[in-house]
Image (cartoon, rainbow, N blue to C red; front, side, top):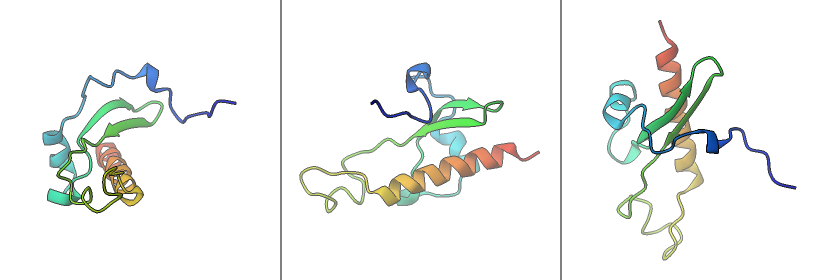
Length: 95
């Protein structure tokens, strides 16, 4: 049985960035190593959904030591990215 996902990504144009890094930086205060949200590709205020992403590069501070030879983004960093996405959503909901 195939897993069910929270959102069907085939319905989202992942190449169409709706909110870029500069606009995110106007809302989210994290910088440098803690800046974990690179862009937002989907926002649906009616359905209350938002989809963002993090550009991961080989010079991320965790790459060298987290599973050497096969770096895997640590779950805690994924959670931080999700938290920043939620913070962006929340701040945009304020009047």
